[in-house]
Amino acid sequence: MTLTDIFELQKEIAPCKSPSDIQKLFDDNGEDCDIQTAQLILDSARKFTVSEQGNAYIKSELIFCPDCKNSSPDKILSNAVEVISISDIIHFGCCECGTMFNVQCAISNVQ
Image (cartoon, rainbow, N blue to C red):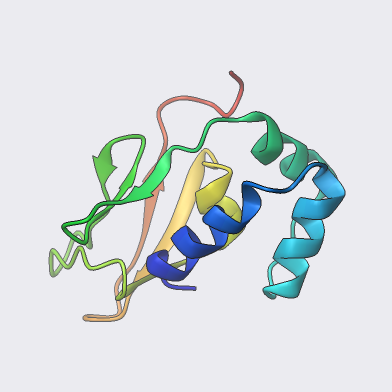
């Protein structure tokens, strides 16, 4: 999914009341999410955002391709569960130049 799509999916999580609701939402969108990760998403504050200026951020850090410097959330792909749950390592792909890259989050998911 593009980061824009993931941000829109994240908005749909707000009304979810249980981990199983979150699992169903991800499943309906073609993403696999285990119950522990769904609970983590339900319990945590969202730290993935897309600004009005059109940039994507995880924990206030700009997401961009290290090769071509593309930062368009419409042209960077990732796994929605990794991004929304803020996994320790999040995998990305750039649609502009084809580069695959990872972002290692300094802070663990544990709050």
